Image (cartoon, rainbow, N blue to C red):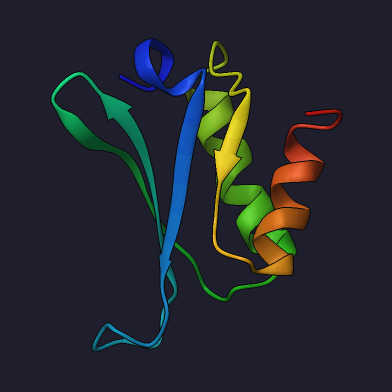
Length: 90
């Protein structure tokens, strides 16, 4: 699903203080022909650029064909910096 639908646009959404536990949760979703589909759930220890970057890189390692043209995220500098580090030049 990530390769088929996520190479154009991938959405990255995070839960801010909405879970019972203090762990940040990021979700990668792709728009499909039948709506949006969650392709990865990233449970992090913190919301630093380094943690987010490692999680995105892990998804890339699992699915090396995934090369999104665009990633839509919240306006969070840690998320933006992590995406720019994993996908330089995009």
